[in-house]
Structure formats: structure tokens, C-alpha cells
Figure 1 (cartoon, helix red, strand yellow):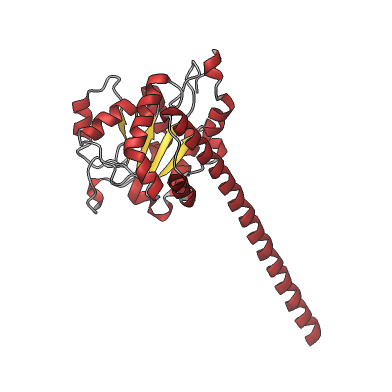
Figure 2 (cartoon, helix red, strand yellow):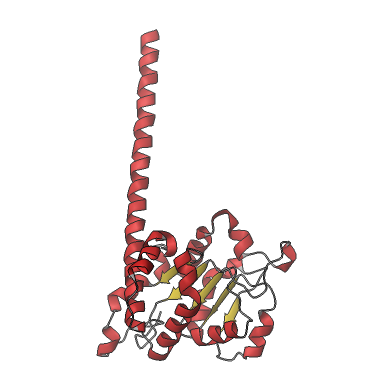
Length: 259
């Protein structure tokens, strides 16, 4: 009887160990897959940056980016077609501090810099900015998201909005640069920069629409590049898979449906 009990214990122990081993193996596979995807996105992003600015990053700069392997924030593939999934992915990136970083308003205690978002979304147009903000609606009830584009909105009105606490903001490169230069928009709390890479009806995006592209890369180089290298800020390439599949097509006159 005693031997049978002991044998049963050993079997259960062996089963537990086997399950734990399988869990660890799956975790390693997932981590490896995520690391591979983020390294692919980082390589793509660096190539786009070098091509746009006509420069080549030094080995020291590349080493810094590779060392900060989490500088690219990978989101779920379903997010490409559902902005609500994008919002949930960004929320998850903040871990236990998501409520404090993304939801709390001025009345929740803990003074933070005014006009300093935790998440900043950069898009090619006002319509795209509004569309992406829909994915964060559930998080902006206490502290409203701020729209930072020029269409139907005056600079002074946005400066006034930025005198309050801001957790999430979305806008276009040109207007965001003006607000940073006016010292209305602060980057002191910025942890995630979302870059909208989805194309418009003509097949152009933040990375390919000529004037907007140039404004974006100037903005990135002057204000976001160093925080990214230091590991203070992560970049989310929203629509990366779409951008890769369409790369170069707009140059040949192709158009794609609006998203």
C-alpha cells in the first residue's frame, strides 16, 4: 500500500514537472517570436529613417538601439484592423501603472506636468487622429484625450487645453512641432509613441506622404530619437504589416482602400 502511494506521488510530481517544462518552453518560444518581430520592425524603422534623412546611423547608435531591444512595442496583429485592440495593447504595455498613466485626471492626487501625455499618437491627417483615438475611449472618461491637428482647431485653443493634465494625445507632425516649440506640449511623461502607418485612399501614410513624411522625420530626429535610444520611450509601429506589404507601391501609382 505504502509503495503504491509513493509511486502515485512520484507520478504526480513527474506530471507537474513535465507541465512546468512545457510552460517554460512555450514561454521561451513566445519571447523568441516577439524578439524576432520587434527586431524586424526596428530594422525596418531604421532603414526608413536613414532613407528619409539621407544618413547612416553609426555603429554606436545601432548598438544602443539593439541594446534597448524593448524600444519597439509590438502589438497584437488584430490591432491592425481594430483600434480597440490597439488601445488594449497599449494599456497592457503600462502594466500595473496603466490606470495612473492613462486614466487619472487632475483630481486624483499626484501632481503631474500639465500638457505632458504618456501616449502620443502621430498620424498623417486629422481623420486618422480621430479614428485612432476611438481605441482609447474607455480610458479617457476622467482625463479627455487631446486632438493636436490644424483642421478646424486653432493653435491657441490647443495651448489652452494643454495647460491641464493630458494622458493621451493624437495629432499631426506639423501641429505637434508647433506646440512643442511653443512649450505647450511637454514630453516629460512620454512613454509610448504610436506611429500610424496605415495608408489613406491614395495609398499614402505618415511615412510616405511627401510633406508630412519630411515633417515627421524632422520631428522624430529632434525630439524623439534620443529618448528612444536611451530606452525612455517605446515606439509602436501601428500598421507595420500593412506598410511592409505596400512599400513602394504608391510610387507606381497604386492606390489602396482607406482604413
